[in-house]
Amino acid sequence: MGSDRHDHDHDHDHDHDHAPIAEGSAVSDESLRLERALRELLIDKGVIDAESIRRQIEVTESRTPAEGARVVARAWTDSTYRDWLLADAKSAIGAFTGLDLAGTPELRVLENTASRHHVVCCTLCSCYPRAVLGVPPSWYKNAEYRSRVVREPRAVLAEFGTELPAGVQIRVVDSTADLRYLVLPLRPAGTDTWSEAELAGVVTRDTMIGVTLPRAAGDRSAGGPVSVAPPLGRPGQDDPSR
Amino acid sequence: MTPPVRLRPGTRVRVDARGVDHHCRTPRYLRGRLGRVVAHLGAFGDPETLAYHRPGALRNLYQVEFEHAELWSPGEAGVLIAADLFEHWLSVEDD
Image 1 (cartoon, one colour):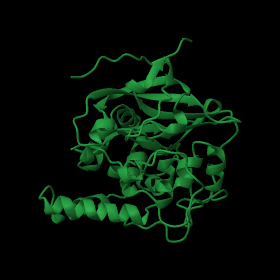
Image 2 (cartoon, each protein chain N blue to C red; image 1 turned 180 degrees about the vertical axis):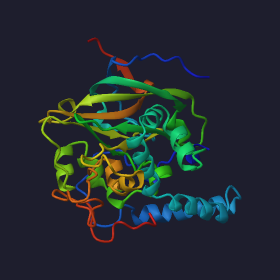
Image 3 (cartoon, rainbow over the protein chains, first blue to last red; image 1 turned 90 degrees about the vertical axis):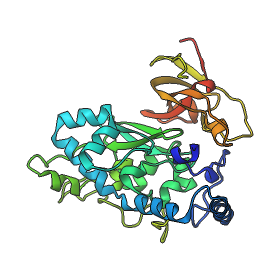
Image 4 (cartoon, one colour; image 1 turned 60 degrees about the vertical axis):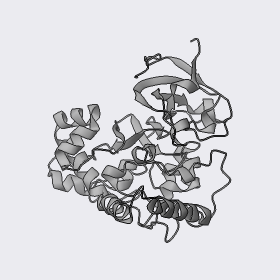
């Protein structure tokens, strides 16, 4: 079934120019009603059952950015692994983490360099590398982030506390179709002697989306690791249930 | 059947500006715009029929890159926007 392979929130794919973002949840009451009606219909007709939905939610929610962080730390310390990750992300991640990635969308890793920074979005809905990062933050799904990051990425990054050095090119990758993207951030300076576990500790969700940069401890001058209050979010928006 | 790959990396392409009233994965902000093929990503079922629970013919998917200034005015220097677009939305433009 297409809807299984495609990790899209189709109810969200209003394909028109967006008005400035409204406050509140990324999901409208209408969408919630639609989801419930569809889910109950599918259960009534025996296409799926409540247990399989529950199990899938459990699997999805068991995935956390810690998986991605371990992968990034390994790539930073092992160039052979990094090359494998860039060439065939699903195999490399599956082999290293033991995660079962069968049936999850194609995955590509975008390598940041001293001269190029990647930031990921999904302007059409909420495509996100859930298999390795878990559930996306609410701001990622909000119209404000989705519409502004392709239009004024520098301003959006600045709101996350991210100022890139002059001359660094920004490449915004819009996950419009069947692939999901994970950013391989630049290893922070001053971490040459760090263990893989220590390195994984500075790799946060937001650094793998590309809206922040990993920082070595003691270098908290501009922004921090995971933003406690996401600049584009509002209180209560990081609701893990969505 | 896997369709032949028609577009090579570096090819200049224009995204079709057609309007559609069904589900599709071509964002409106890219329609009519000129970009460059970065890579062939594989062949995937056509979302424009899959969305309606009809079989989706395999379509070539490409990553296409756009200069920021091609999309917005005023453009920001040093900013590229990349998106994944299906072949039936792309036509070759002469360099």
